Image 1 (cartoon, rainbow, N blue to C red):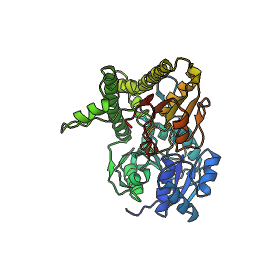
Image 2 (image 1 turned 90 degrees about the vertical axis):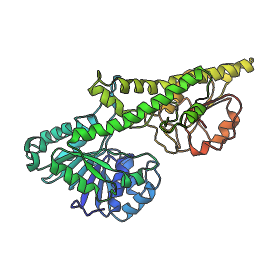
Image 3 (image 1 turned 60 degrees about the horizontal axis):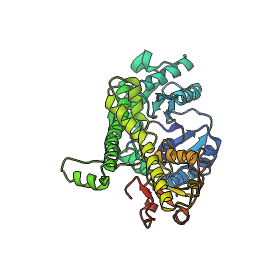
Image 4 (image 1 turned 30 degrees about the vertical axis):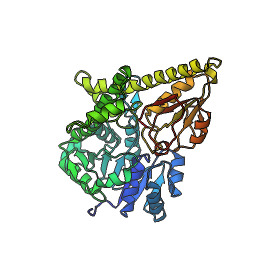
Length: 420
């Protein structure tokens, strides 16, 4: 860890990445102003509490708020460096990237920018987004100079540094993982690296430009998506040929140069389920494997729904006096991965939502990491694991939460998508 010239920084967006990042800087005795459009989020943080589930985050936030190094607000304030960590979702049905949150964040901080400031885009973004952010800032502040027109002599420094952390281990990986930094000039990159070295023990690797840094993050998650798609496709083939996919993968992985991942009900989260489409949107003709992997993973929930319907049919065949409306289905897990509360792009949510629209009987959801069901799942009932085991006729395992690993095996009508 090195000293930083930045004694006051601002983090725009206090979600799953922004809040841990803000807390980490504040834990190094750097004054941090966190900015979020949600007043409830701001109020929660200013009480020293957190609105997301992430190990150790609550403890750090409580400490840095009580010590006065972190405060939250809805309006940006002057600072030496600004880190933008806002969502980059899709718009429309063609998976086109939506940069409106980055644009809004840029316009929000523009009035408080001062000569010598550093602006870093942390949001995972399509190639070219950092340059677009710089252009938005330049339009808002014609009195300041920016790297795209004044190079190393610019008043404002601009860089891209994507997060590369695993939900559930964010607080550790923010410190230990290498950071990829792409500055619009060498000076921009060097200043960004100095900032992160306030807490990062991994290497701050400087890329040649922001585009290389943007593409590096997209490539990392596309690589993982392709490998998951291979495992998910194997699960379809094995089901069709009456082979246990879990046994098959264990056997194949005994080869010293084979390491097949585990299949699941699909792929979710704010990165792997989204980032590959940013590559496809910029290079649709060239990204054939990446597109196909996305389609395989996006279609896996459809296959899971088919297997659930088959299980309901088998149950009704065994109990012919009952109708579909008499069958209770329990789905275990809604998060996009084990042991977190993050439901973004979760295939489990998609599956439960579809069941709520088509199943005539009771639908139970078991998710130990949330207290209330999100919008769109109003046809389901959030219950405890014990209640679901007692009430349900068909059991569907969608997430391998630690709480589910000790479940006594229910009766025969089980759909296990995660190998529990």
